Image 1: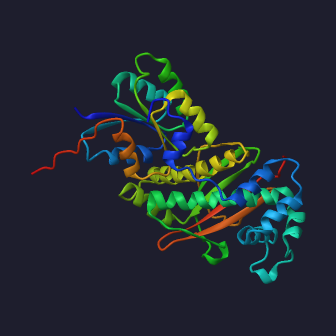
Image 2 (image 1 turned 60 degrees about the vertical axis):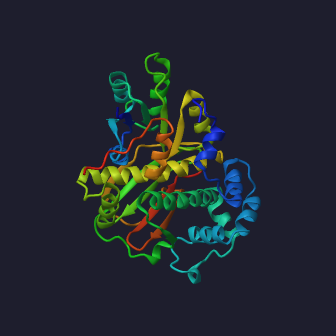
Image 3 (image 1 turned 180 degrees about the horizontal axis):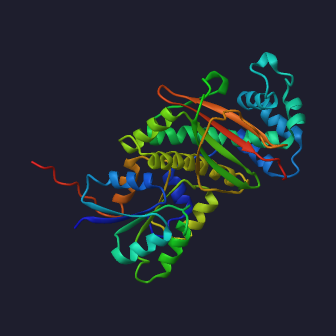
Length: 129
Length: 238
């Protein structure tokens, strides 16, 4: 069963990098451009993991995380924050809301794989003969 | 890592970078409203790089050191006041954020240089702008030639970008630079919020500070891409 990963970021570039990073693995990457879309996709698709940005239009990542944790159906979905904001006050606040990990932009693909593989099983796709 | 990972664990595993002690001390002083200028001068005098940048900012029309009319740190601080020290304090984390972002995302090793060393951007060029507002208020502009912007976007995306994708890449790079820089400011007591990135095309290359404000331009040179980064700080209100 491929891992189902939801990337919530207003930047198409970041969503594309996330998608490309997991292309060699048995994984489906779903995309959402803000927290509101992210919540709707999470409710519909029940992903194995959410990779979440903070600063986004419509609904930011902190609000989405709060709503996710209030929802009995969704609160168990692990969340990794992927954001350019790393100030200690910010990180402390977000850590208290309950996140599995935190990756600061800029980031390398390998760092993202390493963090995600601690949460979901990443199986390399079989190489075509 | 547990669901309730602490900030300390997260900071340790992500290796958040602290500012050097002298820059941190300077930022701490500037973030106070009552810091004596002589305390600020003492820190700047102890660091050749901070001294060089303060004198550059205090002599905006000079093209070389021989043209300086203000030649001492005390003189520069008398002229620029706490706003000049603020600009100096926040330029250091900005330079670090630019280098880290472009090295990590594009494998570009930038060297920061005086802007006069690089060729000016003639004609239309691309600006990625993010504003910050709080104790310190202003904006940061990343300026690239169209060719440099396309090269950066192509490296990230793996193929030549459409116009919309080009804007998104430059916007995201600007966001990463200023987001990192903002985190350093907040940790030092200069809390602020960021605007979403704005992408513009302009023919205007001249650096213009607001009345009573301060501006500084830094050049970034690499083997393949050159870039300018401007920081514009509004008049300091404490």
